[in-house]
Amino acid sequence: MRDGIHPPYGPVVFRDRSTGDLVLTRSTLVAKDPGGTVELDGVSYPVFDVDVTRYSHPFWTGTARSLDSEGRVERFRRRYGAGS
Image 1 (tube, rainbow, N blue to C red):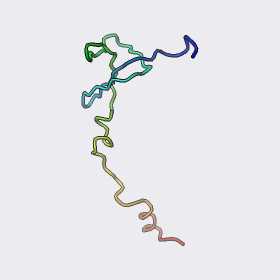
Image 2 (cartoon, one colour):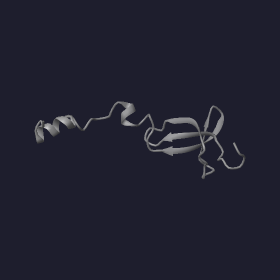
Image 3 (cartoon, rainbow, N blue to C red):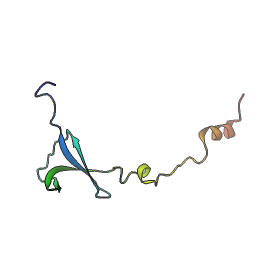
Image 4 (tube, rainbow, N blue to C red):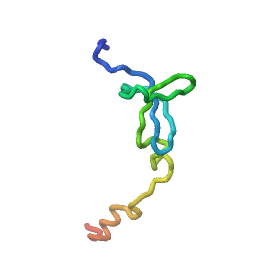
């Protein structure tokens, strides 16, 4: 890789706004707020607040609902006939 053209890649923490859970990972995001840090295991990391993570997403928490209880094909056939 060429020097000077890639953003810095380092450890960051994503915080779920709804549950408060923390996810430590690596990213190219750069903290704009110097006070936006969190300390984990004695090390300070920049923190980014996100709306949805695997801790709050309905699919991963098992609270997802299926709005289509009747299949689309069955509904089409009922509405317009079985066809040929």
